[in-house]
Structure formats: C-alpha cells, structure tokens
Length: 358
Image 1: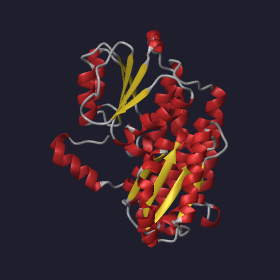
Image 2: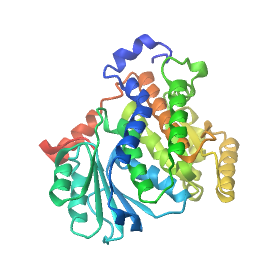
Image 3: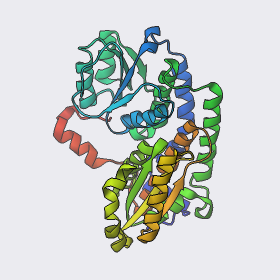
C-alpha cells in the first residue's frame, strides 16, 4: 500500500503519466469547445426530434452525461445505444451521433452500417479509423478526435464536442459565459485534487482512503445518474477494483434490501451517495430516505455533494473528482492506472487482429 502523499512513488506506479492527463481535462474541454464552434452543421438538424448516441465504454458515457443534462431542460429525448444493433427504426427526425476514439470499434461500426440504411442525420466523432472513412465515403458529418490519451481520459473532449453540437442545434442552451464559468470551476477542481495537495486537504485522496481494500457501491440520481456509471467504470479501469452502481429512485424498489448484507460485511464495502446540488421534491425525499436507511443499518458511507455551480460545472467537477479518486485508488493498490490488459485480451478474443480501443 502506498501512502498517497508519497509523491516519489508515483512515477514507478504510473510511468505513462496518467496524472498529467487528468490535469489536462480543462484544456481538452477548451479545445473541444473551440473545435465544435468552428464546425458548420446542416441547418435542418435543428428540426431533430430524437438524438441517438452510439458508442461503447468511455465513448458511450458521453451519451449518459449529455442525456442527464438535456433532461433537465426537457428538450429532445436522448437514447444511448451500446451494442451491435439499433433498438428501433430511424427516421429523418433522428440525429445519430456515433462516437469511437479509435474509429474501429466493432459495435459502433455495426451501428453505423445500420443507421446508414435510413434517412436519419449522422454525425461521426472519431479519432480516425474505418468509421471516419465511412463517414467520408457516404458524405456524413465528421469531427475528428485529436487527443492523445486513453479513450476513457478523452471524456472532456468528447463530451464537450457532443454538448457543443447539441447546443448549436438547439437541444440544450450553453452560452459562452456558461462554458467559461464551468471551465473555471473545473480548473479549480483540478488544482484542489492534484497529487501535490496533501490528503488532509484533498477530497479525492480522502475518498480513495475510505475505499481502500473495499468494494465500492455508488448510489446516484438526478443530474448525476450517469455519473455513477462513470465513477464505477473509472474504478474498474484505473484501479482494477470492484465497484457497483445503483440509480435513484430505482434502488429503493430492489437493491436497498442488500443493506443488511453490506452492513454484516462492513469491512468489505463502502457506499458513496452521490448527490447533485438541486433536487426535485420527490427526488429529495428519496435521497433523504436512503441516507436515513444507511445510518439506521450502520452501513459505512459518505455523501458526495456536487458543487453549487451550474449544471455543466457540476458535471465537469464530478467527472474530475471521480477520475482522481479512481487514480489514487490505483496508486493505493499499486497497479498501473493506464493498463487495461484484460480489456485488450477480451477484444483480441472477440475480434482478433481487428481489436482496438473504444
């Protein structure tokens, strides 16, 4: 076990420099905002009535987070598709956004070929690969991901590209002031959580210490519904540790019954209750009930509160907090955060030589 303030240990465990890429999150958001604002989109895209976001892994989480944001403005519905097949027929009123860091993700290529058979609008967001070639071949809009990092750590760029597109076509309202304020908030968050800040003042290190040697159970709802999944997958990929995610209010109808078991094995579990700054009356009552049950059943837990900033700022700062928590968990477990050897081997087994990043 590494003490998280032992900075001399970081290079040995993290030789590829994931810690620097976490610091780059605000710069990725800025670059994406500039890039998307330089893109001219077809004017008829503003008539879109349903957005479908296709991807896998770190590329798909973009859709979950965007959906949580758009839902608060009660704009167009967003459907996130993970897998090989579209769940419904597409029309001219659908905008399909296909995201793949490599451009060679098998599932996303399959979805492109299906979507291309309909009259829907298609946008490809990829780093190159076959997907970008297909977009060019069939005359679809294409935005290149020009970022050099692990796919999961390109989220700042990918998310801001998708949010920028949705803003340009009227699905969500994001002003320049909104963006700059959110950028300032996430920049401050990075400075507060980076490795130079001691554990006594560093929330991410404190949470990583709470989770040390335990399976993480994340409860999330409202604006942060998809954020729970992001934290879970970052814990999997960075720390190679066990994590679960349950959503609110759904968990009150099923998984809440597992609290007794968690309490009996308290040394093996820790619950994070992820709470946005604003809640409807119904959702507030759900959160209050869950917290009372956690206390009553003596379940080890902490409430992770989002900032009081704008919705986009809350999303940005919670992404960064989760990324740092999972990174410090990797250091604590002395596992290299950038390596995903089992993911790579799984892709080799399913795709052979065509296996690539998401």
